[in-house]
Image (cartoon, rainbow, N blue to C red; front, top):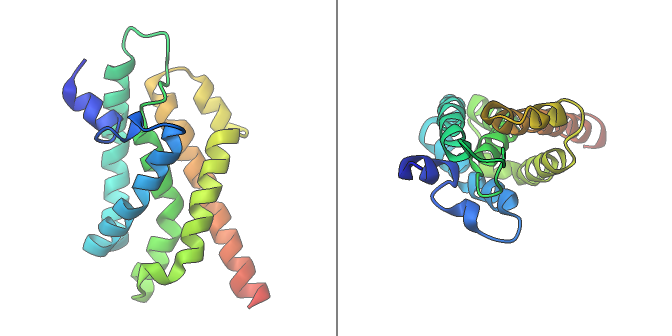
Length: 165
């Protein structure tokens, strides 16, 4: 197995942390997303998602080749990409309005909790992608969970800012 693929797939070894390596992958995605946003705003986060998806698909294909396990728990690059997608509404709002992204800390908590919820429960299309049983499915289930979480973040922000506040 390629050492580079292992480093990418496990996100520099984060995937070997126990318990709950997927949660560790999602947690490490948070400061990394903050750094990407600070360095290049929303556009850089979008580019990182695209690059992360492509590299993650490649690494997953190499790490699972010839294995019965299509989604080993140590592969967490998919969680990083999915968590970044869940944070996109926050990054866009901060970037477009010139805000410090950290002032939206409740949104960060919501993005994390919703992403983990959808990634664990695998409702509808998330489960469909997971059941593909191939490297693309490994990446897609977290992409879809991230999209669901991003929609949830937008709904909660709309509820708070439009109804409650």
